[in-house]
Image 1 (cartoon, rainbow, N blue to C red):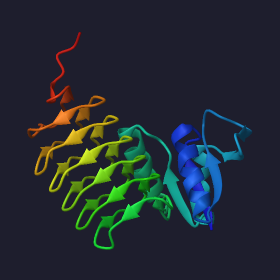
Image 2: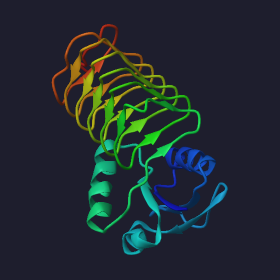
Image 3: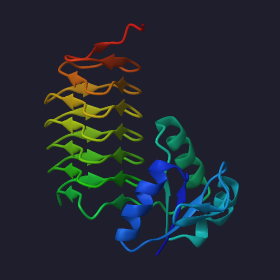
Image 4: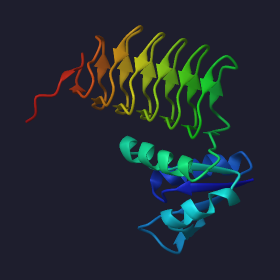
Length: 204
């Protein structure tokens, strides 16, 4: 199976490592790199990928920035790409969970019963998504994030490493939570929150 990864950075390499463990042959596309990339070659640019999507069994965007990832997913979808969801061999996913297209579930991640992960999400290393959670499209849950049961995370939100969210909390769209935040109350959209408990960031 041939996999195209757009983005030859650190996150792309993590996806490639997990994908190879699942039997994929990896091809990288990137506009800012050329030639060799660690153990892989750069096959071409993003424009070349758009022209060649039909040659790949699966395509995934290896870009951590949520808005950029969602923009490229839309462009690739319009080009007719078949998206791949890559789930690391060590991830644990309930058979009753729903995982969307073009998602990446990293090593040690857990998605429990009746959770729903929408398209283009990153569930990073050691992150847990408990029962009945809903994670909207383009969300990035960084390493070691823990969502308690019944949590809703809005579109393109980014929870920093070690963030924890209390059960039945709603986090709006485009929220950024700082490293180690503890979210104990609902968070409105387009907020930056930090701390324990998490509060709106006032700047420095």
